[in-house]
Amino acid sequence: MPKTRPDYLEAILAIARDLTASLAAEDRYARLLDAVRSVLPCDAASLLRLEGDVLVPLAGYGLSPEALAQRYDRRDHPRLDLILRSPDPVRFPPDSPLADPFDGFLEIDPEGHDRIHACLGCALSYDGEIVGALTADARDPLAFESVDSNVLAALGALAGAALRTSALIEALERRAERTDAVAKALQRSAVQLSGEIVGTSSSVRRLLDEIALVASSDLPVLITGETGSGKELVAHRIHASSPRGEAALIHVNCAALPESIAESELFGHVAGAFTGATKDRPGKFEIADGATLFLDEVGELPLSIQPKLLRALEQGEIQRVGSDRTHRVNVRVIAATNRDLPSEVEQGRFRADLFHRLAVFPVRVPPLRDRREDIALLAGHFLAGWRRRLGLGPVRLTGDAKRALERYDWPGNVRELENVVSRAVLRSAKTGERSGTILIPLEHLDLPGATGGAPTAGSAALAPIATGSFAASTEDHSDARTLKERVEDFQREEIRAALARNGGVWAGAARELGMHRSNLHHLAKRLGLLED
Image (cartoon, rainbow, N blue to C red; front, side, top):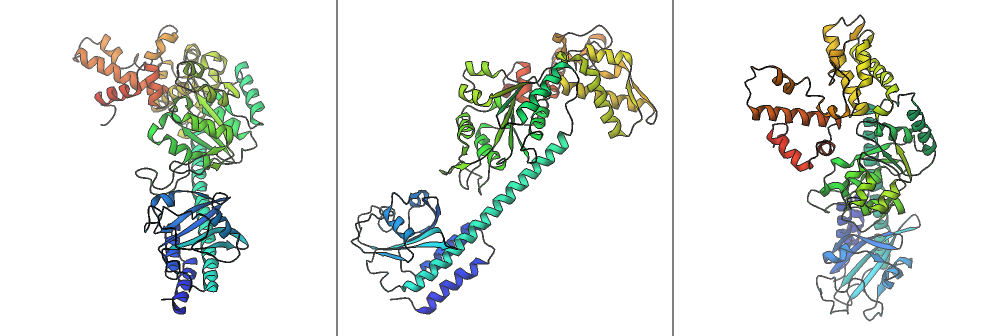
């Protein structure tokens, strides 16, 4: 029985109301298709969005999941191409020689045997632009004969407006999400990296010259250097001096990415891609579009992710987990590592092509022991910072303390120097007059060899132990601890010290201690340093 005009009006009113309703995109599409089905006596229907030459299903009824998961290139599907080119709704005769793209995907005929059925479609447009298509199929060859073409055209016009509205809302949501992520990245940069590259040595001057040279380009940069030498600071300096300096520097700590989520974190995912993926989420590459992406500890990136990173670098294309669509991004990549990547390539742990793509312009940050003339300058810089934070008067190092700093080999580099100075200021401020001049004596530095001769690089790893529990046990014969307890105390101090020198990164601490990261975690749990 043909639909009455009130039915048509009700469907049109439903679509019109939804144009101004606060709905999620999926709900808007489903309700739009429900309204259309109330007018069309169909067994299957689909709502598709046009992306370039490809139609992407947004909602469907009476179609198999496979049909809704596919992409339909108009160049491969003459019926869909004809629908998109026609200014009016198109009814296909039952004996049309043009293949139906949904044959074999209809729930009423999953094998595609019944090819004699009614089929119609109309292009969806907004402001003169084709934005998608609406299709309907019915087993009855005469099902659409009584449908008023003018009403169908009106439905198509409203559906096109609804499709455009949803697309604009989605775009605004993506932009808001990206803006929020960028704001968090900028806040992190402001809090954690308000420092500067301090030093007047020849190695620092060469480093600053290299930064100035590469910053003006858009080349990928690979920053190498020991843990704590200031690689992240160099990355921020390169970005700030570049044409992208007004945008955010998006930071990714590759060492902290479990392999199971690394791909999603970098490239994003779509809803339903895996358990817990309840909505679409952009990855760091999309967030950094038009800006700079800093891949810290890039040597820790799983091998399975490296081909996708190479593609992003070479072609500027990324693909979200669970999606077959590609996104083009304009991202400058700066990477950093304390690993010997050529050696990692030889051992099969890092791709050679990715290494060469990252190392277009290599920058090496010198260790602190190679620029000893900067140690006093850096120490003064850190002293001034802590003086301001604690509201102290002048803070000075005694001569012995300054000479001890200059003799030490600094296996933890600038980060270790900052930690040593910070602890010394706190100790000295506690015992001295806060408003007067505070002198930091040698014993407050907590350095190995601080009360004896100059330390060597080999003794540096025992730095936290020399004034700790292990040293006390060798001098105090009344120590009641068992040998096992003393060994465990020694292990705890070593792990804490390695973590401190590696900025809390377990992977770096494990490498320094010559252990696999999982074994170090097990040991730390047994020693009570980590909770189960």
